[in-house]
Image 1 (cartoon, rainbow, N blue to C red):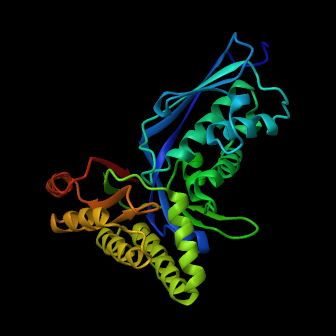
Image 2 (cartoon, rainbow, N blue to C red):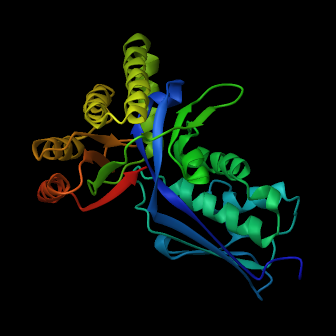
Length: 320
């Protein structure tokens, strides 16, 4: 067994969608960025039990890989690596997973956990070909189908590459473009404390689109237009314009019915405290919102206002 690494560890970041969520599923552009200070961590070690165990204390899980169903995301991440490595019998290892990323909050927890497992297990198997960003993203995308139903591909891309990207879902290959950030942008991320199912929200938007295709196509078009304009603003260092576009994007997400009273309340609180712009981020119906701020008094005031308005947690992340 000396061809395998004794202990392998890998991490993957959380993510926020800055512009274009939901519309990205329908081929419109979106912009997303990693939250590198929040991470999922997977560690693979030898086991003397002649079994492959998956341990996830955050989820209160301690299971044999063989006993988990096909729709278990942790098991699927491990099985995809073994399948790609053409290994039929699971190795005698323990895969330990923990995450700092809140679950069901729009911050890419599921994608980050899957990516961390995939990288760590590939490292353990000494398979460099399964550790590159393209492969980690592709395998994570397959796991994302459990969480999202019809994933756009943006979450797995951001957590695998860990850099801000301009993303368009298209065939035969998605458009994935890192882009220049002329001036660092500071975002306060605030959690409503309300957990939300991405799969349910995406499915509900799909149902409404099928019932009102013209109305929802226009909403998607506007979100795509905003994402394109936002990229131009970010590349030009026009922070004020980027902020205005955030708030405009939130208004269209409200029309898409994916906001919530809690999200709207936090967005309003951030704007009244002086934020340059604010919107929900992710699937909506709960989870997180983001506010663009300037360092110093504005950031302090916005964080205080969000906490006073009921945010259960706030962090600041910098797009640079």
